[in-house]
Amino acid sequence: MNEHLHYLREAHRNGNLIPFIGAGYGASEAGLPSWPQLLGAGTTYLRSQSPRSVSAQKIRTLEALAKSGDLPAAFQFFQGLFNDTAAAHYDSVRYQGFFNDLFHEPEAHPTGLTEALRALSPRVAITTNYDLLLERAQVTPGRRSVTWLDTAGIRSLLRSESGVIHLHGRYDVPRSIILSSSDYQRIVLDNDSEAIAQAAFHSGVLMFLGSSVGGLADPHMGKLLAEFARISDRTKEEQSPHIALFNGRLPGVDIAQMRAYGIEAVSYGDDYADLPQFLDRISENETITLSSPVTRSLVNSINHATTAGAALGHIAKFIEREVFPGRTVRITFCELVETADQGMQLEARHVLPLNATHNVFNYPLSIAAWSLVEGRIVAWPQERDVLCNIGLLERMGRLDRVRSLLSSKTVRDSPEIQKYVDLARVTDRFERRELTLGDFFQDWSAGQPDHRYNQFICLPVPVTESFGNRERIREYGVFNIDSQDGNTLLDRRSAELLKLASALAVAVCERKRPAQER
Image (cartoon, rainbow, N blue to C red; front, side):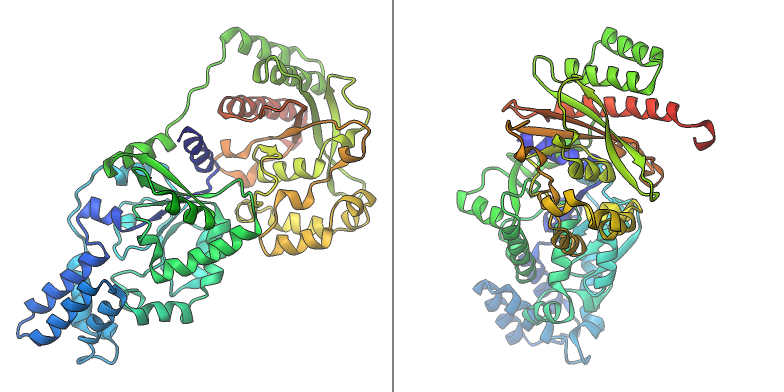
């Protein structure tokens, strides 16, 4: 579980964690009914109407359908009982009254789950619930709330905005409520389910909570997850799966089914009451210790360095000695520089050790460049099949720059690009938001007599998750760190210390800039 917890923490810190919230949330926080319980509440509601508008025989038929287990058919019959006073059941005042009685400002019974979700402060939350508990609790920073009727709104939220997406509708928008077999047919016909599934799959790390395996298999969710499976099948060995949180231990067949959808099943504890504490552990800060003498020595060395290159060399030595002690690594700092045609490119400037390489192209500059533009640490080959976060680039205002670069004459005419990268395929997958890091990996070392590395890390300067306003962050370059060691370079400790190294390098590069540009 620690591995998955760290993974969720990283997604949270990068702003890529999207809670996908099922009926369990409303049940625990406000005593709201599950789907089967909703049908029982409907039967009680019909019996309570005065004068009775539905015969006892029809209510008995409804109860028999409920006992059969075919809930969509039972709800289909339930909705038909309201067609006597309106052209469509959702236009019936009695039908609307039923949902208002249940979901309009229900009495809350906080268990700590809402506070735990609010502490996560996700940019977007997705739910299959009809209530507005998430909006009332202000779980997301944005206040926008959309249903499946607004496909464009859903895609906009997933790309760059903030708010709540109601996949099964809202109680106060009766036409949007998805209950019966005909409702599921409506959502398939009226809504581009494939587009929503693809946007959700690629928008970040979905964290399913408050849902059972059976709850994930309702007709609409089944269509979404079938699309997930199709997408996941195209990205085998996906290193960034979505996560479904369950209590206890799932049967192996359920775990296998989740993986077919690109979803990893993770237990958060033995009981549903353990969920808030698990979510708190995602949002809490982890402490990494570094001795004071080491810190003072590093800062003093940087301050007394006479050139930026010397200062960056001290940071590289810190990475070698403190981040990867006892291991053999090579480190290069690639600086972002302006080209003759006023474009930008990475150029290797400083190498540790000095005789580490005679060929700067041993380092995969295409992956380093993507690490810089996303502003996150990339580990290779673990992330070969990870999808590039196109939505993040759009939110950061960097999407058009990358698009222009792909179509630029400099890139198209580059013999190195032509040799190692299928540019047409990269451009196509970029526009379809299906681009992976492996699509544009330039394997310069493959042609060398001796293979230069087994793995590498790209550390951008800066790592932008440390900044509140990512759109205004200036980019300086990338530390490339490689090794022939078989043990992975990137773990929780090394990731945090590398972020410190990146922040120190930002200070060095800022000091190097002319005063009028700061």
